[in-house]
Image 1 (cartoon, rainbow, N blue to C red):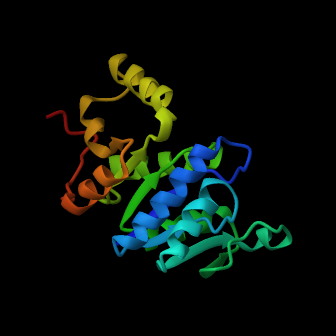
Image 2: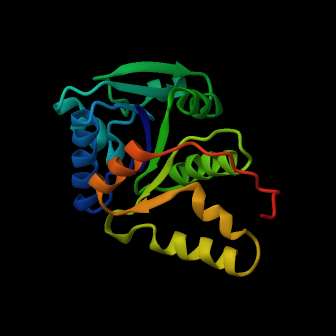
Image 3: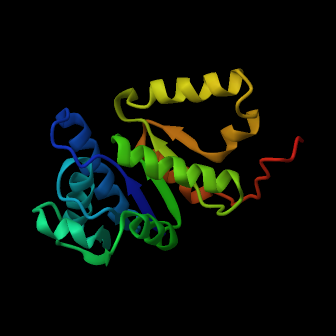
Length: 188
């Protein structure tokens, strides 16, 4: 399975997030999965790649060409270069069989919510996972619950993604996942 991991490129974070990233990358490789990621060598993004690389995992990094002028690209992988960030996200979506959101910032949120929206509109049927390391996404999940409780989303949205703070549980979910059709406008 090609698994896209969305996560932070920042190094200014608690080391426990980097450790979780490396452990997750190792587990990806040990489970025979290919890592699809944004090709960054820093932050959780770089940690996941290093972990996968250490275990001889297959890694595909997708990055816009304008990042060439910075020293931020993880080069120990197959690199795919795009012209824009939009093309990068599209390539990541098309090459992936599943999406995992680990701790990150604006870019991570953007990528996750785009995949969630597309699944809600039945544009894909791939699994989406929030890897809630150290409770990082507790407030985001509370915001989603508030939107649900105030009628901005239906109860059905909770079927669109899986949340866990345990990497083994995440792989069990991915292994048992059954694609399903989702109709945002069906009131059943």
